[in-house]
Length: 143
Image (cartoon, rainbow, N blue to C red):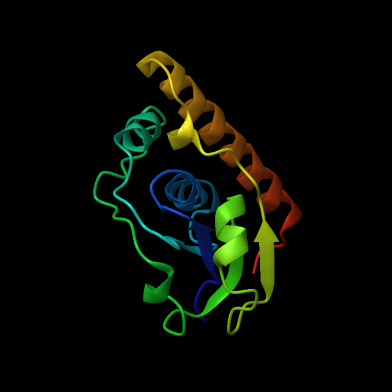
């Protein structure tokens, strides 16, 4: 039997959902098959790569994907929407999904200011996602 597929969905698939995908892989080991996608994908933000490297997680080879790459093609069991805009535009039902979760995180890519201010926001969001994933894993029985 294969591991349950978790899809993290965001608008751009450039920051939050990429972080969540990588952090779930790190924290859950082989309990889940983690993926991410966007409703309007953009290139991965370089600050996302940088702040994940700070945790020893290399996502430099990941790419942004459109949600259509997965819809009807990947047996998603748990859909986790990580931004308000994606919540508005993503499908309200997902074929085969057993759970649809909404974890709202601020968009770090939208923050204006110096590089230090931007990096600080990216780290803040990364840490919030990391904490939420740890809490969810603690609540979730092993498949």
